[in-house]
Length: 332
Length: 290
Image (cartoon, rainbow over all chains, first blue to last red; front, side, top):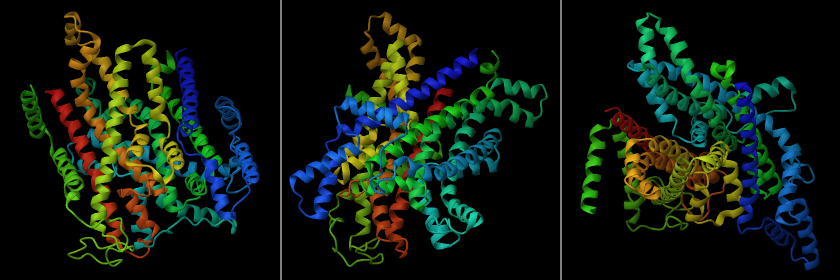
């Protein structure tokens, strides 16, 4: 019974998060004085010379319809919730008119998911194992060295690590392409190898910081658990050190680390977006960048709404791992 | 009153220095270096790094241009100094706003309990989970390149308050049950009075950590936005400096002082701040252990 209660609360929280996030997304821009439509109309008049007022007016009306900006604020909000959030319909993309925004995102999303999912999981596993070792054997020199390395890598933001990797490994050493170069027209094998070659550096930038963070947090957790009474008691009972590390310390710290993973997903996603832009990787990040440069607001709204939904659902899925580590929720 | 307060503060600082580890000291040293560079050195009169062609373009480092010049003939060293000042200012303003709101919300949630607590906690948790960068992208894209430092700091602090709020709330929950709070309550102090005289001093120590964290976060967020070309174009920040150098192909042409100096500065600034934060955390946990 406790499990069902846990499940329902988590799902409700997830829906609430999505709703609040999307509501902020809808209302915050409307408090800012700038008007994207006036900007676009101005751009057009600059491009095509002066237009007569009637034509300007009709362009304005068309754009308003395309952006879903007709009617009162409340009808706009309902329209946005119904079409955007429930139907994933954000209207046509203005930079690739008239392809719907959703179609363009659907092409890019798998790359971003591929990049951030793998790196997050690998970072979590590797970082926690090293962190467990560093916390459990905290007086060893190798443990201290690993912690030092983590301290010097973790605080650097993703894009900066990406930039440094790009300069060192792509530009100076020439081991990897400077920007992503994924080849589509020469069969699946070429596509796959070029995808891997282009993904290594962006993935490495996300991986390094992730591993750094998990080492630091796991080390702190493991060393505090290792000094608890029940661990000393297990030692007095003659339980082997590896069993203490695995069963006593690892399992106890997993609870915290699973929750922490759920909280970290948003940050990883943001980092992946920037790493993509540095390497021109064909994911959602570069799509957002193009949309910004060409003032494609439907596209910006679409990518961000879908990101919020994706992150919230991923967070929910990670949260649902929790009962597997905590028998109190599973069995009672 | 102020004398004794200053005396106590001095005592505290000496205490922190004495009981903190090497990590804290290195962090403090690096952070002070940047503070002096940003708020001290930047006041020395120099040519405005914004003007184009004050010097010959793409000069190597020399006695007049310590770090060479950019392809637009701007002095890299003074640009860097101004960028450090602006990035720090931005980070500190955003962190101040975020921390103050965070403390207020956290105390309100922790001490009110009930429905107020549940509503605030839910909103706080949402703000922690939401991917912040995309929303910051949207807002800054709408403001366009014309935002001021204050405007950008305000935008960055929209997401800066949630983490401190959560921490202050859990601190308030544990403090609420302590004896000295009951003593204060029974001796007739009102709730706001208790919060100001008894709780706030505690919250301040704790919030110092989240304040520094928020500073780091805001500087990181700004430089991330700069990579997207969304940081105000008329503002020299470390992120913008990197972005401008990237835009003008400093990497491809191998102008390492130009692209390298803001990268190195940012890396050291982040490591310094982080060492300071984790060192201070260590100090706090050690003091609690005593």
